[in-house]
Length: 80
Image (cartoon, rainbow, N blue to C red; front, top):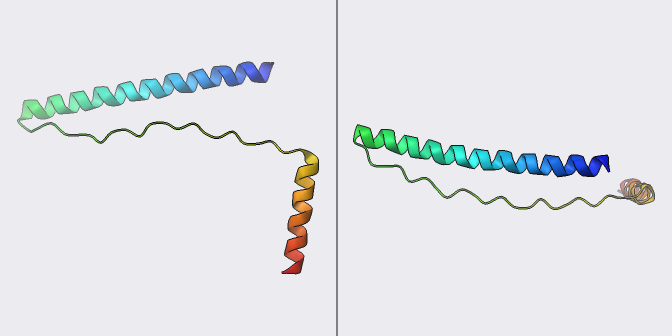
């Protein structure tokens, strides 16, 4: 239960931080273009930001699966 709540809060916290970063980047672009306009230069066109993609969840392996994997790996190294 504790882990579930911790993951839930961390996910929201990370989302809030990403939103804040996007807001600050937009504000910085606006301020930069404002200063350039005041100095008589044309505004800068910024490339479109990449959209965040979901990270695939890693599949947890059981101990017997890990052991079988290590044994198979050791066997393939011996034959080479």
